[in-house]
Amino acid sequence: MAIYLLKGVNSMKLRFAIAFVVCFSMITGIAIADQDALTTKIKSMSGLIAYYPLESDYKDVGPKKLHGAEVGDAKAFGWTDGVNGGKALTIDSDQFNGSFLDIPAPIGSPFDTATASCVTWVKLYPKNGWQAICERSNLWYLETENKPAEWKDNAVVWRIYDPVAVGGGGAGQMRDNANIAIKDNEWYQLGWTYDGLTMVGYVNGKKVISKDYPDKLGPVAGTPNPPPAGKGANYNLSLGTWQQRDDWFKGAIDDFAYFSSVLTENEMMSLYETMMSASSSVTSKDKSATLWGEIKTK
Image (tube, rainbow, N blue to C red; front, top):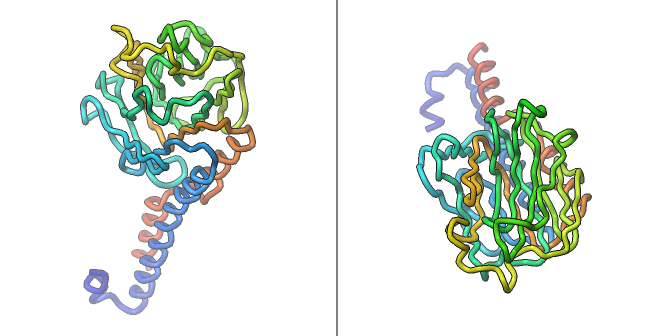
């Protein structure tokens, strides 16, 4: 095909065309290398349960292969440029209520651990109120809240629930509206850890808030199974909703990972730096368009 396209091209243009093909291949490789660098890093860390790169599919590339699936209206889902190369998942469950990415986590699943770490990347599109980024229904959540009358931008909110009185009590909301807020239309790495005593919240690799909570991360022996009426259908993980209260999401999510181990601040920062330093944030699409424009002028 490439030979056919080059027929009739004079020698100067031919050289530039060949250079374009070579450069495009190199650029494409760089985009893949961005994702490869982070994937390699995450897979090397202890306690990995599941990792979803969200590269145009919902596959778990971690050890358990706990693949995700769309729930709801297919029009709620799409793909956009990732944080630094590759792709990211877009979800508009704000418009298409009841739509989210569902990750199987029934009681008895590999996600049942007393300690845990969760990390993902998120870009919020403008929306008032709550944005449900990720949660394990009735057991914990990571959300944001936008309330223009009271504070600027989106407050980040972390919470662990009482594992027996599911969907209530527990650690209470861990938040700081004044100092921990993220802007719309910008990528952020958000995460949390729990060591059995303390929940710690992270933004862009940095520890920003913590709260003591010694009453365990569910499920535990007394966790009701199935959940009580009105508390959601199951204990699955969800991206883009909070099933218990119908909080929705409008934005993009990239590279969601969950661990049984408690990541240190250095490890959280290493994940952030790996994502951000792999290569230029200019995408292969941008670069190839520039190169082709230059070739056509020769």
